[in-house]
Length: 286
Image (cartoon, helix red, strand yellow):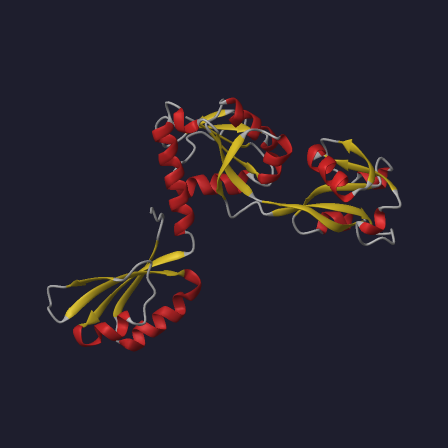
């Protein structure tokens, strides 16, 4: 089976890091390679433009793909968004020159606008919805320079921090849509010959996401302190306890979010736990 992923751009590196956390590691590093074998037998990575991934997955050339939600919407491809990922978060915004007095979409309704964007379909739907008197100029390069070149009055483009817009003398005045990275699949993937492998890949992806930010904690607890320690512990379901060869000592295992780890350790130590060990969790498969 094939997974289409970005060959460059802001989603490329986090996508590779995510796949490595799943256990899917590329076995080649040639930047010119378009199809790369991985550490999973029978799973290949297809390196393509981020915006092309929805159409490639729709066509069945790749069973799965990782791209931006914005590109899925823009393409209109008949694919299924299977997993929302926690990277690639951004906003598609309408931005105008900082020198303009207008600060809202409503204030723009008296102007005739030329809007440069690579999101032609998203922009078209947006200006109709907002009842703007606009002409959409489709581009494939950097939109930010278009107003300063005189090729457009405003832009609809992706914004992460807003720094690039500010550097080009632009200000965002409305959010067109929110975007984030997604795992997409062909609508008919469940019927394909690779369905079992695809389902396993999706399960491992969800497991890697569920494990993010969680730690496993092991500790030894005297019998007399067991109830007090357990009452101090978080757990996914309930802490696991096992009596050790010494009958007066229990091993207690639990899972905690990383951001509350110091508090948890302080509580159980004060309650009588000792020999506390904290380890990373790679995956949580439910």
